[in-house]
Amino acid sequence: MSLSDPVRPGHRPAPSLVVRSRPADDVSEALMDHLPDGTGLAWVRRGEGHVGWGAAAKLEVAGSNRFAEAQAWWKDLVAGAVVRDEVGVPGSGLVCFGSFGFTDADPSELVVPEVIVGRRGGTAWVTTISPASALPPPPELTRYEPEPVGQVAFADGSRSGTDWSGIVADAVRRITAGELDKVVLARDLIALAPEPIDLRWPLRQLAAAYPNCWTFSVDGLIGATPELLVRREKGLITSRVLAGTIRRTGDDAHDLALAASLARSSKDLEEHEFAVRSVADALEPHCKSMNVPETPFVLHLPNVMHLASDVAGVAANGASALGLAAALHPSAAVCGTPTDVARDLIGEIEGMSRGRFSGPVGWMDAAGDGEWCIALRCGQADPADPTRMRLFAGAGIVAGSDPEAELAETNAKLVPMRDALGD
Image (cartoon, rainbow, N blue to C red; front, side, top):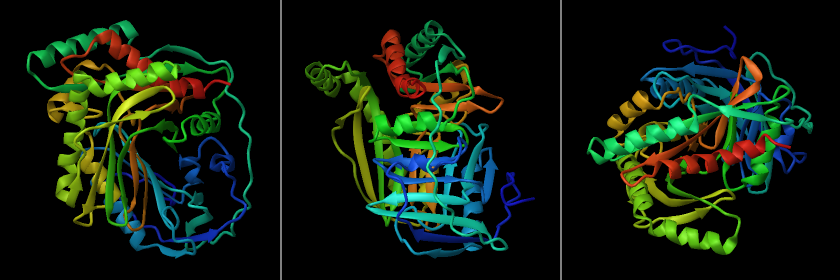
């Protein structure tokens, strides 16, 4: 088995890797420019972050122990690595990218690239990662220009919009009957391109249009998510919770009025409260102290506005960023309340496999610091048909939800990926 071969649960070799991060002065302001093809890895926000390609090591897992399996594998790999980090900023040194399925049955993975190009706080670097027996020279950085996708057609995914609205109505009836408080229901849309989709094109479009979101790419799952599940950095833990959404009109005065109505909406405030409470409860055992805002603020994005709360805490134990993500997933923002009841209802009525949509996606370093977001505003490339992608969106359903309004909300959340695939 080579170091880049997938690793199955129960078999976690600890490859001996040599890692070197060096400062670089030829890194593009647009990190995506350096990706040599559409299979690369990416984590970029506001022009900072890192991209990578190749696979020095890779783990594929599934099942109820997938997070524990991944953490054990990463711990073994870190212990066997020789690291020379001449940069010393978050994201330099030994780093893995990862993406986890929404359910236990959905595939999950961690990937250690062969090359990482990063930029943070005015510092740019290149990291090379290889087996101890092969020490490649630093790569010459090249800038690439991806081809536009072309005219894309869209088709219903697992269900039509009308059918999905009926599912929402069913969920509202169950909530009103007292079976649960909230459930998050998702739908998919199929994008069909005339030629194979070069994922670098939509990635660049997303990073440019949504700079305040985290633009990501892991094994064909790409998107620009506004929701930070958890960040751990030098003992500080933070999480951004989004729940409660309204579509923007493009008229600034009207949008300000809509933002004010969102901040007063009892339906959206109720949905947001469930989400914040689930995050705070999950993080509390891992924090010495916590700050949980009493009221949310309105986060303005180009296509929608969200009720948002930033939860912060001081780490009380050695839980890694991935360990914290495991404790948080699935939060009420992507599943519902109570969690078990909502998860069962999703499996019963949603009618599709989410795959890695709404699961944790992000990165982690050798010290366990890193960032994990929720994979939202995203699409999954079809490995069997490179002209095809599944796009995803979801909405939180509570007692006051209106099915047609929730359908409109999912249409607004599909806009980033739909636009990114266009010229």
